[in-house]
Length: 404
Image 1: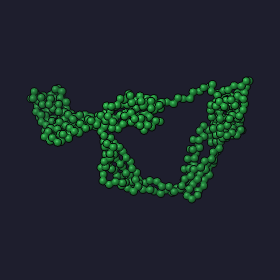
Image 2: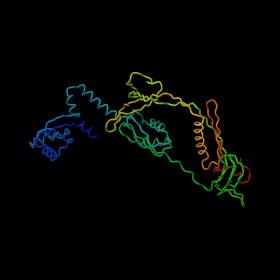
Image 3: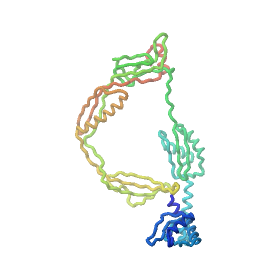
Image 4: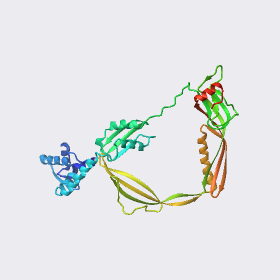
């Protein structure tokens, strides 16, 4: 940032001619002349870089003290550049027009960033913003951030908070989503424990409710295991709770071809650049299409910004083409069986959840270049699932009839 400021206000490389260069540097320091990059020349003179305002002060100190003289070695920066163009009116007019257009573009929206959303798509938020007049190319002076935020919250009930921060030509939209209300335990709500899958019961533990299944019973998915109705005395409804363990069986298969194809990158790459301006694309290359027969294409969009974060309505598009060849790989039946067995084991562990595998066996078949592996397993797992009862089920429980 310092080098940019020096370029804008101008700077000069000066040489101090003095019998004792240290004395000249000390005089500059005592008079608060700011300088940098101090060096001694082979002849013993001191060279330093100073800004344009510091150069004016340096000349004044040299005249008042008479201890040294100042000689400009190099000058650079916007003031000197404009001075050289003082008679080139067309260039000055073009430069002024460019500065004017750059300043004018800062009052229009050229980028909208949405952060903080996880489940609500950014496209849904951007569509709602567009309906409220917040869109690419719109004037930021016509936007009332608080009013837009309030209307967006009414349109998207999944959001609990939204704010719009105006950074010139970039609008930053920060949102917070509503947290789902957790299910509260209500002991007054009649619930039952039902089987979520078929199996043979090994253990039933009822903390609340009445056991309707016993070890050794065979149950199907959806069967009642612990009832809400407790038939003691006059009977009562409870919030059934407990655990039910059962033996379960699985059979699942996966297939894999022995011959596969994969990409092998050659290392050859090609790049093409283009510009996006006002919704139109300007290609900076002549030949179209992909440069290679087989390649991956990666496109990167880069907004042009000025120092300070002002975004220009110009986007640089870089297309990178990465060439590859298709390589044929052949697996042995043993390798394919090993891969499929590992995948089936992971799938089984994910399905049984809370439980363990008692025994498992794999069966492999090969036909027409295709390997099929079948897993058969016996497991022990918790199959009880709590569910609130409907009014019809509650009525049936009270009179001891089967549930509808």
